[in-house]
Amino acid sequence: MARDRLTDFTGAEIRVGATIAYPTRRGNRVRNSEAIVLETMSDRSTGRVVPMLKVRPTGRDSGFIARKTTAIRTVSAEHAVVIQDPEPAPKS
Image (cartoon, rainbow, N blue to C red):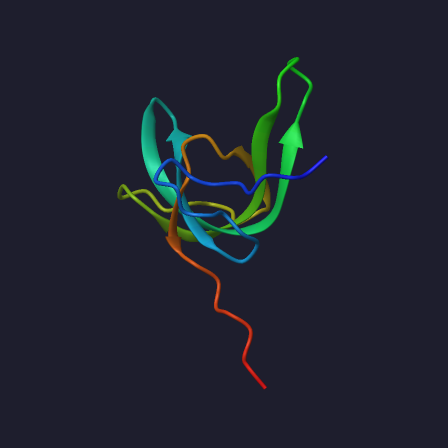
């Protein structure tokens, strides 16, 4: 079975090393967070396939309260958007 490419809602491909923005919760509010994609995967525990991303937050978030940790997180790819593609490999 062929594996389709994972894209954000704009159609940009989400690849390992890409910088994304995704929504996070802080108390009773929602903010945007920036992170680097470490791995793409899928979750089938709910009976349907849900694309997931393992990411490391960069620490740049919206809002005036700073993020306390930059621990690796697993987030849904449903509302993520690519803001910077990974650098291509150098040509020899």
